[in-house]
Image (cartoon, rainbow, N blue to C red):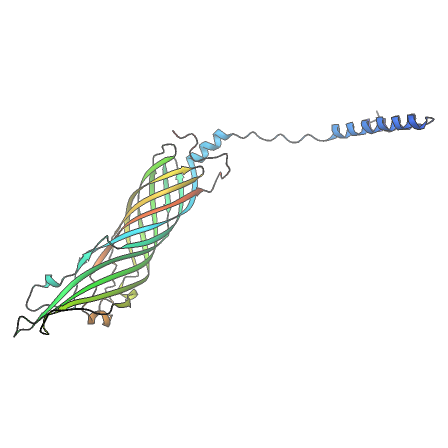
Length: 316
C-alpha cells in the first residue's frame, strides 16, 4: 500500500500531464496543501508532563527544609568573677576598698553570624558561626596618706576598659510554634570560642590634697594590646527566644540569646606578664564572660525556591 506522501506525488504527476497552465497551478496548490497536512500529522506528540502536585510539595516544604542566612546585632557583656587578684596590698586599710568594681551589661559590643539551620516539623538544629566583639569595664581606687600629716592625701581612680574579639562555634536546638506568618521559638545550645584579639585601656584621674590645695588631674589614657592576657579558648551555654516573620520564602528574624560562660577567660600563665599594667596596679581576675546578644537578620530555604512555594502555605 502506498504511503500518504507517495499518493500525493502520484496525484501531482497524473494531473499535471496534458493540463494547461491554470489547471497545473491549481493541481500544485492542492498537492502543497496535502504535503503540509501530512507533515503536521506526522509530527510526534509532545510528551505529557507530570501534573504539579502543589499540595504535596507544600507539605514537604513545611516538614523538612534547609535554611541559610545572616544576622547581626549588638551585645552587652558582664564578667562573673571566680577569684580576685591584685598587684598592691594595702597595709593600713581593708583590701576590699581597692577591689575592682565591675560595670556589667553597660557597654555595647557587636557581632555578625552566618546561620545554617535544618528544620523538621517544628524542631530544628542550627549551626551559627559568629564573629563577636565584647566590651566591659571595671574600676578601682587607691589612696596614699602621709603618715606624719594625715591631711596630705593622694587619691587615684582607675577605669579599665576591656575589648575582646572571639570567633564562636555555637550549635543550637530550636522549637518553634507556627501561627501563619509569625513563628515564635525557644532555643538552647552550647558554644566554643577562639580568642582572636584583645585590647585594654586604662584611664587614670585623681585628686591631689598633698600640694597645699585640692588639685584635680587626669593622665593620658593607656592603651595596650592584651591578647596574651586572655585564654585562647573558652566555652559556655546558650539559652534564648526569638521570632520569625515569614515573608514568602524569606524568614525575617529577631533573635535574643543569653550566653553564659562556663570557663575562665583569663590566661593564668600570663596574668602578670604585662609590666605596663603592673606599673599602674592592675592585673586580671579569674572570671567568666556572660553576654546578652540581640540580633536581626533573615534566612531563606535551600529547597523549593520557586514562587509556587511559600513558607506560610497551609499554616493555621
